[in-house]
Image (tube, rainbow, N blue to C red; front, top):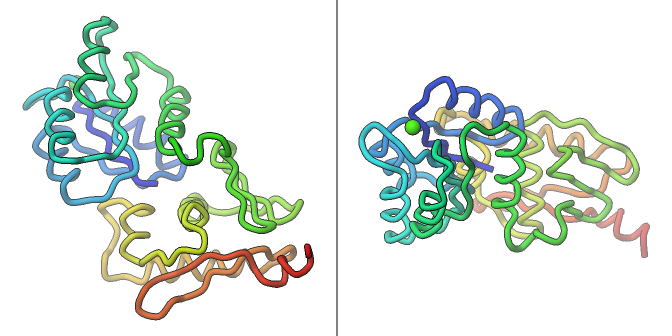
Amino acid sequence: MRVLVVEDDIPLATILERGLVEDGYAVDLAHRVIDARHYAESNDYDVVVLDLGLPDGNGLDLCAELRADGFAVPILMLTARDSLSDKVSGLDSGADDYLTKPFDYPELAARLRALVRRPADARSPVLEVGELKLDPASRRVWMGAIVVPFTSREFSLLEYLMIHVSEVVSRTELLEHVWDANYDGLSNVVDVHIANLRRKLAGPGGAATIETVRGAGYRLSASKEAEGERS
Ligand code: CA
């Protein structure tokens, strides 16, 4: 999952970035409206955290502008002011949710999870593909009854592939949703992580396979053996 954080308070932005990276998000930070607009137009985000007061404009206007341009990504608005009119304006401008400062990071994280998952996964937060299960809230993965450790990036990659199970997902799409703007676009970072995922998925209780679709990308499916064992 890739998140754009628009926040001019550098210490707060840094805390958010640290927490989100730890939670497995790819994070881009923007401190001004102009940078935020540029990022929103050039990258593919899963969710946006948007501060209301910014040095070169305000979050409400930016939100309204983005929505007018057809930007459909969920937006969580941050406001320092706990007034009803700010909340109403925030939601009117096209934000999906708001959070009043000061807030605790876990609350922000929980709200982002709810936004990212809405509406398709709202009823079933745990992803399942064959014997492979992934719980985004606890960030755990099971193969059968065994908990398998994954790095933060591997987890995000697997989560994205599981959301798009049986679909071909391109390398570019993975870079857009799992990595932030600082990745080295020329490196084989996706291939390396896919290789690591495959190795882990092939372990005891191996439940899913990641197939390379030549010239198109990757496809995660429940492994045939696991299906066979169950039938
Ligand atoms: Ca601010």
